[in-house]
Length: 382
Image 1 (tube, rainbow, N blue to C red):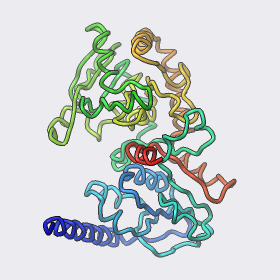
Image 2: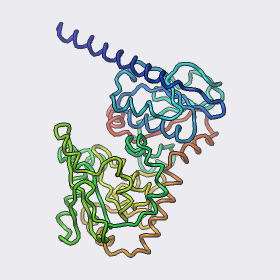
Image 3: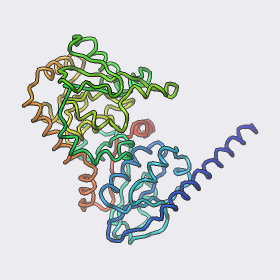
């Protein structure tokens, strides 16, 4: 009993130490509020939503906003070192309780429903993970945040090179790279709740049904860029916390977006506990056409042979891949153009923020996000 009490005291002390360090590091940046720029204030409480909270702050920073984060000891103190570093590098970012701007001219975004109407904000937005209780058929009735890239992509700022990457010469027809740890990516929720194939099942279906000439295995950045490979190219690697060295077998974060831009198509395998995954957004950002089973989880819905290749189940996947391998350059070029257009109109962070600023129909709104385990937690409580 005494040991448990001491452990709790130690944990609280670590939270406070971490919190004070974050404030000290942020203060050292000597933030200057720019009255010529629009301002957004964030207040976060949910620890399970770090990647999405960070991404949303980055969306507004990329769009030229002053980004203010209200102090919260428990949320900040529990943050990992990785997220601390990424957050501190957000442009125009400050942790404060000071009101730099008039609330009437400020957006306010929070995941705390109780704290949404504390001031007369220009617009207050509730960042809601409760998306899995809504039917996909009704998504058009709700306001969804464009699913983000992996947080590392924003931290590295490689998104600034998207126009250049989109012009790259394509070297392979179909590509996939992503964690292939069987224990993590055979989550039964994908079948039982979403009725989708899991990642391991999707990949194995192709490995079992494509000829040796139609599939190529690589490690890391070992792509053949000398000739066009009309095949499914798979970067095979898996990772768990106990297999840290295996990350050397994957494409590095720094090279990821550029590597995606070398492929005509990307196999959109499901994530751990939801269909949508960061890598499908990253692929579309460089004009690589998504091949996926969950088009209805995009708003607006992706369309087959217009801005995606859509399959339904194993046999259909095999047939669609064979169609892809037979597809001519003109068809692919049209698809690529449409994917880039879709990304710029519906997935681009800057486009999203611009639409947010222009939404004047409601003063208090819900913004929904596919937040993986956090979304399942909300669903399970209902």
